[in-house]
Image (cartoon, rainbow, N blue to C red; front, side, top):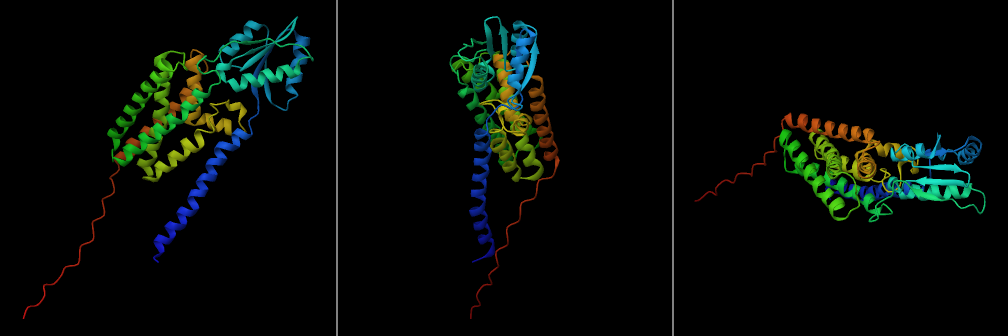
Length: 330
């Protein structure tokens, strides 16, 4: 048997289990290690009681990053600005909890359990949802499921322009067009139809389109620079790493270190954070995510333009068929 088919056989047998193992690690490990890690939480109220509550929360081994506020109004403002996920307000009747389920229902439930455990036994802890998740998606499952299709759309756009041999400006225009249409269609589905997004419609469409553009431009740019292997590299980075590391189904601060931080540097994580900001928080705390997506999109489009200026490889000439000599006739 020839050596080349043998090598391809071994590559397939080894590569598929490796990819499956990597996928299981990327998706299952962060989910199995979900826990608060420097989760921003506010404490408001009179000094003696608030100090004791803060000490109790700080005893949880760096689980919470405590921010002190003078009043309940200041704590509410911090929640609406996405400076903290929630706040405990110390009153004469006992502690009260302010949450924002729109920032992450998993975090809101975790804070409810933590504050209840810290309160004196038998003391009820009133909970106020300052920025509530929409009634159509109270657990955030639909919003979390939106990021993976966006990643797939971006990878598909980058792959299509490569396989169709679009280069330079045409490739960049195609990726831009796909991103714009996907953003508009997805906003129509998630906001106008399903009602899981409740912010400014065009801001949501722009966020969705920018996320697809950042992913698609990266995949197309890698393919323009290093060839078809860039499609696989881009898909691996955006889908297999970026999606499970995004923290969109929980929160970046609930993922193991440094997974949550890495996820926010990639387009799926930045897109999920930006979508929450424009959909539920009037665009507060959107600057870092917008910058991340813009940088990925700009670098990807630049790579597409630069790669398009390179001369495409010439197709291999087919081997000439051996000529046949006419038979000698007597």
